[in-house]
Image 1 (tube, rainbow, N blue to C red):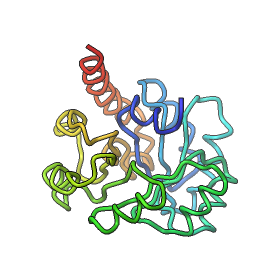
Image 2 (cartoon, one colour):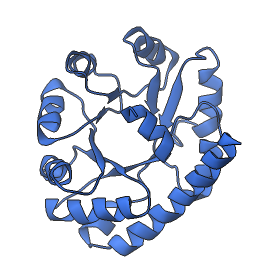
Image 3 (tube, rainbow, N blue to C red):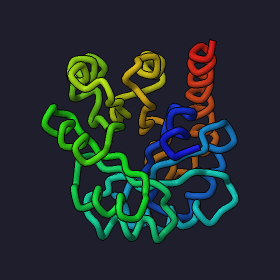
Length: 215
């Protein structure tokens, strides 16, 4: 199973900011326990790379990647720390080229027709759509995707439990980014029971939808 196959199967990719790497393993264990064995650690904090390193070196079974990757140096550092995929809010071509040269799965962001066309020309047909709700949500994705039948999206930003099913049931949605699952303040406070409960609810929604798709 490829990384992108895993994204689709899991349905929700928790997107997290960690301020203290000591919280990385407890967080990963909470997600793995409820059936969300993937996490994107955003490179927005000083603890991000060490957090990736902790999860990659642990025995959680979590597929860990790096988010908010905007240049080649960050991409290289993240992969050296153990990241198995890279995510960017936009389309930094130096990251795209480096990822392809090193066979690293990369999810670039695109929200305009020009950006989508450029991504396709570089060989990418699964794209991040961020910030999803701010940019029009599913209505915008449906409208913008019509000219691009081969493209699917992983929207992030503003998605929550209440609208998760609506997103996942749309044929243009490969998976979603779940920034609501593991809020920075919750992680910092060690509220892993609350995080696990929210993740469990999200995983249940995904299971129900994937089961219907198989019928």
